[in-house]
Image 1 (tube, rainbow, N blue to C red):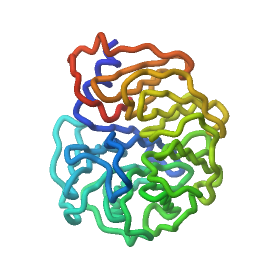
Image 2: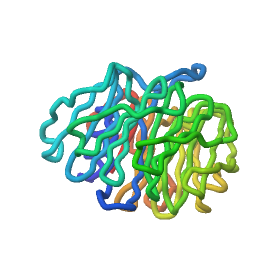
Image 3: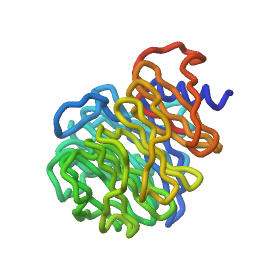
Length: 298
């Protein structure tokens, strides 16, 4: 129960905390806090008060609105401001190969190779908003508006465009079992098994916006505007509906053999059988919030 409470408290502050390996060739999963409106594609979909956090080498780095970056070197007990690159909103951050990469509005990409002490801008291949970024198999993959996907195989120094095959806004991306899976508006899900070079459409039963995706125990779980939870056990090739949970769901987290999904109006659900069955925990939410929960991590 204490672990679940810890997850809930993190979600309430709209922080996504990802613990990842600092060794070369490691992989990580990033969940990005996203807005839950249904407006048309734009440069950024995160709220002004939404931040995204990643960790590596004992350091937590958080990014947010107006290019703000803060870091902690004492396991989150205290945070210090990092000199920001500019005032461009940053929507997501990931860690891999001793490098932090953050992405944001207008194609902004910044990186740090000194444990988040300083960041510098990287020349991006696009000028439209980037919503999220993840790392796996020595590759950073970032996703954004109009179906844009960009990737880097040199620790975020240079980036190339990849063709997603879709034109709707991509909201989130994750990595697992040598597979990148990205979720988007209009029910689109795309996947890549060649480190983000090429992408194929996955089969899924929904047409609404898919806000978040997570991975654990050989299972991908995605959450949909409207409350649907999707699940794939074949490396993201096919997704099926496992439950209609109610209000809009926005984020997915996995840890200790448990999936937790969160959403608007304090929605909180958990599964201990790899996403097959879900139970609502909203009624026992210890902080009693009816506010939107954006993201969750373990």
